[in-house]
Length: 205
Image (cartoon, helix red, strand yellow):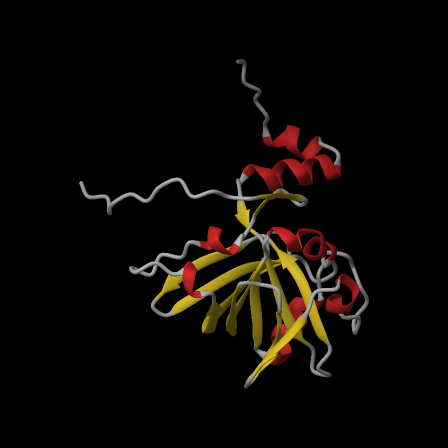
């Protein structure tokens, strides 16, 4: 099969939405996660993100990319204001509702109410969870790193608490997230159901 070659000049010449779809798919499959926040008036917000990344385990740090403020202001402003937020895995039955949270609702409008997802509160945690999610955790803000090249922000949080079903955790700490039905995403609107293939031993020279 023949291959196709594109230059950076080709990419810049593409129509906006074609370029967005193409480049978003280029990095491959990603996790799909709902981030729950509150503003200072305690209005809950929920938004889907597909660029969550593990940073380190000691301390336990998780990061994500927030788009420019004019495109996605609420999650970042809430995290700045309160310093705490939740991450909630999406499983197959939640896809349509989770995707709908990407709509640009006005400030003060709850995506929980608009999508029918259940808001869940846990003691001493002032950020909302998704009740239906089977893997969810709390992050405390550590750092927000502006990315000047495109006006986005890399948000880094420390894991403060984790809630998940027991059958997900293996004896050595490996998480079988497929047991929770956690999905992956591709591009800006493609969703996939992953399947476990294998685990391999620690690689040595």
